[in-house]
Length: 254
Figure 1 (cartoon, rainbow, N blue to C red):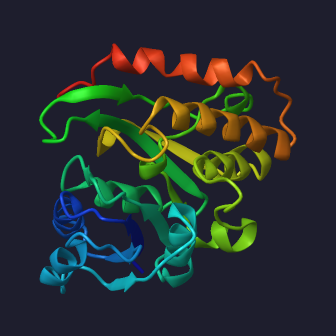
Figure 2: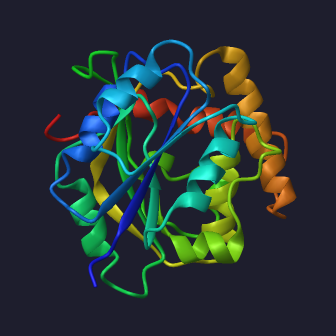
């Protein structure tokens, strides 16, 4: 049986960008894809755009929620695929074969998760602003502030069923907590794909202000402590500094 992939997109007043995301998923060459859109009761025309593209996605819900991670958890509960990934409402895949490569990786039944690289782009998706190059996971990386780029992180649905989903206690860094739990605590088997999988528009809730960046890194520190990782308050500074090189390197071919 071919690997079925569920992609969860969370939207909230995303009229300016949601069409790009829908078309990016619909344009993938791999056919066994389920696209689930969880909208947070948008009021800016997002729903009109989504409805215009009915037939290009599988499921859409629009209702108030408890934040982005609550919405993602709704998507996880609805997902029917063997593998679940997340694509934000202002992001796109780097090419039309990304999900085909993901499916090929999961043909190895021993693989629980895979992830790759990500680039932050300007609003027009024409200029690279920041290059998030990842690396193969090894113990000790989360304590240094590392994490895989969440929109590139694909996980078997069975892993969510076994180890849980996003912790809504964390409003900005529940993806850091989740990837840490899966990779560092539960030791799931992951594969790193050394290529750009996702183009992300610069912004997002966590990166929207200096205050949110600081709050997000404090949350990441709390997530480490919650999961028993030995970190000190200096972790907050280390995590911020670990991002600096991303602004000075460029991905090949982009």
